[in-house]
Image 1 (tube, protein in one colour):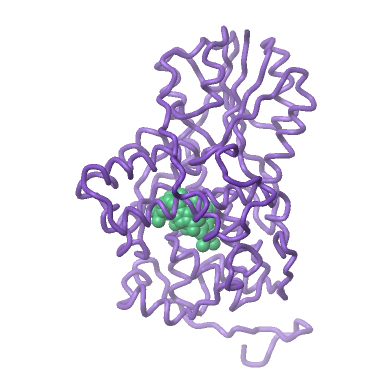
Image 2 (tube, rainbow, N blue to C red; image 1 turned 120 degrees about the horizontal axis):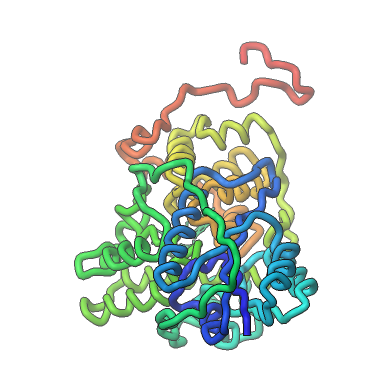
Length: 432
Ligand SMILES: Cc1cc2nc3c(=O)[nH]c(=O)nc-3n(C[C@H](O)[C@H](O)[C@H](O)COP(=O)(O)OP(=O)(O)OC[C@H]3O[C@@H](n4cnc5c(N)ncnc54)[C@H](O)[C@@H]3O)c2cc1C
């Protein structure tokens, strides 16, 4: 039997049920498709740091596979066209993949299945619980986080599964070079893609004197590695499974005792879980301006304001610093994301999807469910019971960067500019 495993955002060998399902095949082709370059809300392509982390994750996976007599075929193009061709070329009897969240991801899977000519098996995605563990049908899933958490947090999270001891050999096919990323990691967040570096960070974070024990006090820190786990890039690419992170927290608690901080860290993994299942449930509504409930909010699009926000050149120094940190490192803290998003949505009244698309391009931890779910939440069209968040940007700066160190470090203090340089008919305003 010849199988094809189609990797998506599950770039790991361990705890990967779809890959395990093909471990007894006679021949196995492992394939990945580069993300598609689709224009979306003034953004195309993916940012340098996000691309770097992806290339490193693919290269690390390929190295692990080669050490086991396997390889990874990385292709440009549409899976819906290329997979049926590949299946014909290698005489595949079955293709397997995982259930990545997202509307386009679902459509792509369906188109692949329709054209393939052999079965497409879709295995569970990177979550703590499987759909059949959930104590509710997805259609009846709570729309807000707290009732969801109350229903799931006491359920046992199954232990992660180690990688299969042996993988079947690949069919006779030419494997292509993956290429090199164009940028290096920024010293502001010197982390690399791949499971081994993810495990190193997880081990460091959950060791006896690791950050997890004081996470509740430090998690609002604006710089990575100092205050929060920074595990999101490995989780988003699937170099680590969510169950591995949960198991490491439990092991830390078993040895060092649990506290508010370790519980809070689990709480955040449940947030991730919540957004995954909501994304599956909400499907295309995750990308609609009014979300699943169709709650439209008034917005406008001033190109100059969007350009200033996305360059980090507004009249809000903290927001500038946050955007500049994102452009340089590919990462921003959770607090930072909320502040930057509130600025776009509430100060500039821009459709939240412009901000979500900009984050999608640049975040090294871009995850469709968490990104669009959090943007909807902030804009008041998603899961927030309070109907959105409008932060007082001066107060946020005073509370989270009282001495302006972070803002100075990232070059956030910019010369003030007039907010309006043209009138409603686009004529230049006098003095602007
Ligand atoms: C506007 C906006 C956009 C976001 N976009 C993304 C995104 O594309 N990808 C992404 O992984 N997270 C996203 N988040 C959630 C959160 O900001 C990041 O997960 C977190 O900052 C990552 O840093 P960390 O790994 O140090 O998190 P920690 O604080 O150490 O948390 C541990 C893990 O819990 C999960 N988590 C924590 N907070 C959240 C949350 N609010 N929602 C969902 N999961 C969470 C992440 O997997 C994270 O790695 C977004 C938040 C906002 C407000």
